[in-house]
Length: 393
Image (cartoon, rainbow, N blue to C red; front, side, top):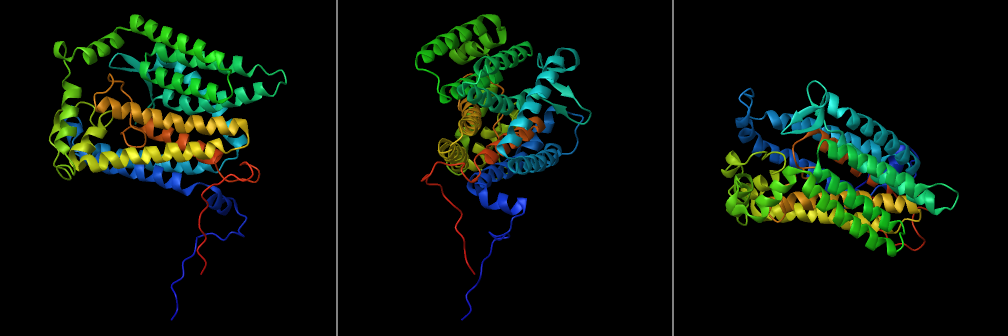
C-alpha cells in the first residue's frame, strides 16, 4: 500500500534566497504573528459597523474592515521582506528609518494634523502616518548597535550617541505630546542598555532618573494628571470609556455572546483601535482573550530564548529589545482594557485598526525574524534550538 507523501515547497539543497529563508526563519514566530494579524482583520469586521456611527460621512458599515485588510496585507509584505535581510541590512534599514522618522517628527508641529490636542500624524492624502510608530524599532536597533560598538573599545562613543538619539526622540515625542510612547520607548531603551552589559551601579542611577522623570511629566502635562486622577478617583470623574470596556469584557464570560452579538461596542469610543481587546472579549469571551495573551507570550518567550543564544552582542540585544517592545506594548493595551493602569492611547500589536501601527509592527517583527534566523555561526555551539522537522517522502 502506497503511503501518502508530504513535501516542503523548498529542497534543502536549494540555494535560492527564498529557500534559504524558508529553512532558517523561525516559522513558529512567523505563524504566531500571522495568526494575530488574521485575528485583527476578523475583529475589524466585528467592530467596524459600530465604529462608523461616530462618523456620519461613512456609509459603508465595513469601511474600517476593508482598510484593515489592506494594512494587514501590507504589514505581511513588510514583515516577510524585512525578514530576508542580513544583520547588516537590518542595521542599515533601521538607521535610515530612524533618521527619516526623526525628520518627520521634527516637522509635525508645522505640518502635522492635530487630533484630540496632539499633533502626531502627517496627512498623506487617503491615509495618515504616525512616525513615532516607526521610530520605536529603529531606535532600539540603532541603540543596540551603538552599545555593541562602544563595548569594542575602539574609540566609538556608542553609549553617548545612543543616549543622544534617545533624548532627541523623547524630546520630539513630548512636543506632540505622546506620554505613552515616551514611556514605552524609554522602558525598552533602558532594558536594552541593561542587557548590553551596563554595570550594576548604573541601575540605581537609571531608576532614580526614571522616577524623577515621571514626577516631572506629572507636573508638566495636565492631561497626564487628569488620566491619573480618573484612575485613582473614578467616582469623581467621567470614566465612561473604560467603564463600558470593562462591562464588555465581563459580559463576554467564558465563550462570549457570539459573532456580531456584542452590544457594549456601540458605546465604547475608539473601540476599533485602543479598545479592540474589549470587543473581542465580549463576542468571543475569555477563550479568545487567553488565546491572544498566549500568542503574545509565545512570541516574547520564544523570541527572547532565541535572542539570548545568539553569539553577536548587537544581534542579541537588538532581537531581545524588539521582542520586549512587542510584549510591553501588548501588556499596556491589555492592562488599560482591564482597568489596571490609566488609559494610554496605545494600540494592541497586530490587532488594533491603524495603518501606521500595523505597518510598524510588521517592520518590528520582520527585524526580529531577520536577526534570529539560523545562520552559520550565529548561535553559540551546542545551543538547543527547535529546528523544523524534515518529513521525507
